[in-house]
Length: 286
Image (tube, rainbow, N blue to C red; front, side, top):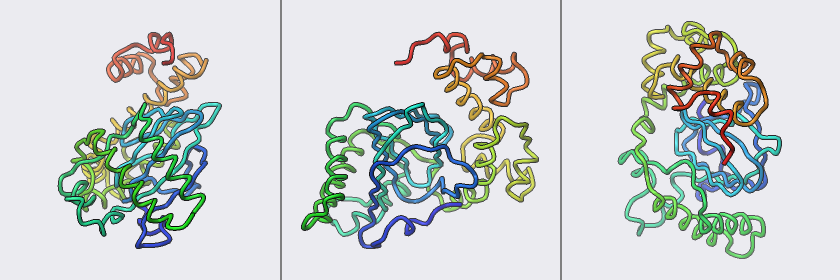
């Protein structure tokens, strides 16, 4: 289900939640964790490595990377390395800057009216890393006027994210699409946790308690692609992770990721990534 923004913030007049030193885990159904919410989510990775699914794209986070999830952007951790990714988590409410009249525009205008969002992954930004480290330190020490200091630091963070470039989020933010996300969330969780099994369109629709025709329509409206294409992309992304980060045989990976036909897998993989599985296996990690 979609999380209400208020669940993250103790003080509704200061919608900022900072949780340092978290470790990536792979979401499971029983975790009860929300994958979609209105708040901006910032993860500053300082150690290890993890792979996140944001929308329908796999994003690899290494130490030093800053990962940003826009409001109502589906996301989940789908893989962790042996050294699991460690990060500082910052949740920012869309009303955080409402008292600042000199910004020119508020965050809700940017996300919902202009339909723009932040780029999900920022690499090699010493300035951004410095600011986020200062945010963590200020929140930990909580010296006199620390909230005032945090508001100033987060203003600089948001400004840097804007300067880094904004992207279109046409598929996010509509109230109707948000309701669609709520409806299809059970199917998204089933795909995330059971992608290695045989999953049919009928089974996914049943998981959401709707008929398959309505399910197909609202899924494409919410996610931008059909349910079965989303499932295929999710399987391919996981196969790619295993190819690049494990010594498993390709046939075993194909089976582990829910593909029953090796020839079909090779065709889909080449179309999706532009290289063959064998080429990917032989590529050196950057």
